[in-house]
Length: 320
Ligand SMILES: Nc1ncnc2c1ncn2[C@@H]1O[C@H](COP(=O)(O)OP(=O)(O)O)[C@@H](O)[C@H]1O
Ligand SMILES: [Mg+2]
Image 1 (cartoon, helix red, strand yellow):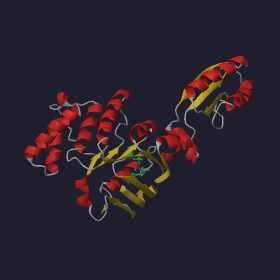
Image 2 (image 1 turned 180 degrees about the horizontal axis):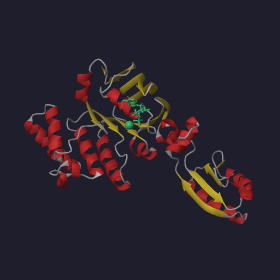
Image 3 (image 1 turned 90 degrees about the vertical axis):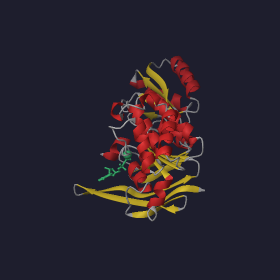
Image 4 (image 1 turned 135 degrees about the vertical axis):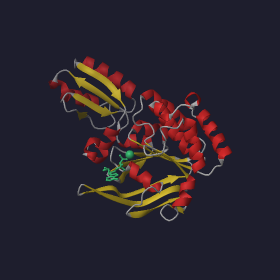
């Protein structure tokens, strides 16, 4: 059964005499106890979606419910059901990590004793014990995200909104935060998570909705989306341009889809089933045929590949 439901949301902004359709008929369904990844580049409408669903802004039209409660008609009820973490969530830089969490508890009317207790629990759970008594302004990026996330959990909400939880973090902090989020969602919380990273959606979400210009343009599990765009790719860069045609036909024989040529005219790539073994096979075959290579490798599809395939334009074009 669907727990978070959005139907045909529209939100327009006018900025500098230009009308921007931040949401252009966006619909979403998140079944209870699952994690939905909202994947899209900068400007796609991710934050606007989260803001509508968390009652921070009103859409021009459309409808949204959480557990059957109308988001537009009963915002106060919704606020008690949800936790929100994102760039705009309130963290006071001057207060310590502990004080911030305690303050959130008081805002939710937990009572002084319970608010203190909950702050202590969350500090331990998020591995922030050493930082708990320092002002947040001295925190590292990763620690800030943790305290922000912890703030969303103060009341143990059945629904959690995480807006780009790891954007801007270094790879190590990102891994750490993924682990925290995974632990969190393994106990049946319903989560809507937005991200610009296909890999993040892949790691954390049960199902992914790809959004572009305020609309959902594709939906499925990470595997389904990757299959749709051809899974892993093998990429080979040839030394001699005159070998490209022959190289393409050789690679086509090992690939699961069309072979494409890069802008440089000499890098050929194709989606394959088993990248490691196909790459080995390709290296052997190309050597036997005396086709020299500059470079050879395998790579996972990126958000750019997904976008290119689904929309025919690159992700950068969207916000431009
Ligand atoms: N307050 C606002 N005023 C004008 N335009 C806005 C406002 N908020 C968002 N937008 C525009 O709406 C579009 C979607 O923005 P947003 O939902 O923040 O995207 P995302 O979170 O996916 O990066 C963008 O083109 C953005 O510039
Ligand atoms: Mg955003």
